[in-house]
Image (tube, rainbow, N blue to C red; front, side, top):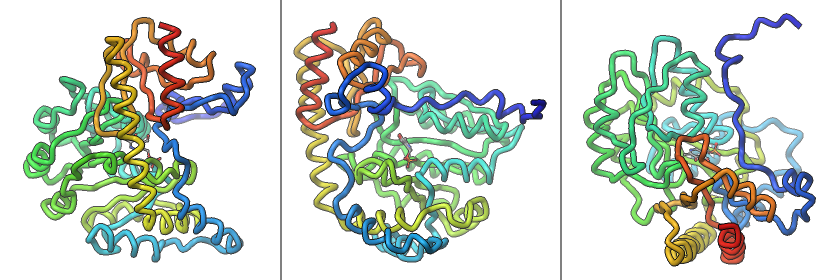
Length: 360
Ligand SMILES: Cc1ncc(COP(=O)(O)O)c(C=O)c1O
């Protein structure tokens, strides 16, 4: 073949997700039921039951195209968030909305400010649209917002901050974020990624942020606390002006009818959200205490994963895999000697710890 592939596509590294259970079972000759996956920051309780019921009911209408404007789900979200419908956009996962931002704002000659250890999709999308990723050091593995603000120039189009972040587990205070937003030049979009917001003990006043500035956008997802990573459903809210720009970049039916129904069901599932947070909090304590007893270094925040530091991390992750425990080595993320482990239910955490200690 003599295909003329765009430079940026040819040089885009392939995203490597956490290994699926079935693949590990096949490759390691293990029973899938004996494998635990703590690699992709998923909800170990499964999907929200109310979402499942709503999605089952939606299956009989699958011969119809979805409502492209997602009237019911965006209405429900607008009530919950205290914004109007035209301030909301839905995505096939919040990842897709990061891509909308790329479509709308990035091209060669522009740049995106992000942390040194950013959520992996920010540099991917930046590269894809030919823009420059400016990675700003993260002292103590936390975003340094004043330094990020200092790095802005006339070619900056986006600042991307996940709080809590991923792969590092720390979050910024509301005062830090507000200071950044207040001092943001008007030509820059501040993309606040709240994928893990529900795990925080004290939620920041996000409405206040978008009321301050029309160039702030807040990304949220159903993939984490609602347990719907497989459904691919995320949303963002901002000023009507910014949302109107992004609406022009999306496919007409980017969110399926089943996903819309799942989102509507999930938003009612407060009991599930509370239970998920309680089990996550208990899991963080369980893992921290056990690692602390063995003097193993770790980083924990208010989110659904932790970083663990061990010498020879790649070998340790491989040995865990042999024992049917999937975690994520951070060797390729610049976080030397660290792996990321998602918080599981008590028995999963026990198995992870038991296997880790036997390896070490
Ligand atoms: C910081 C951050 N943002 C966004 C996402 C992706 O969310 P979604 O599944 O909604 O595309 C993740 C998933 O791991 C994440 O860690």
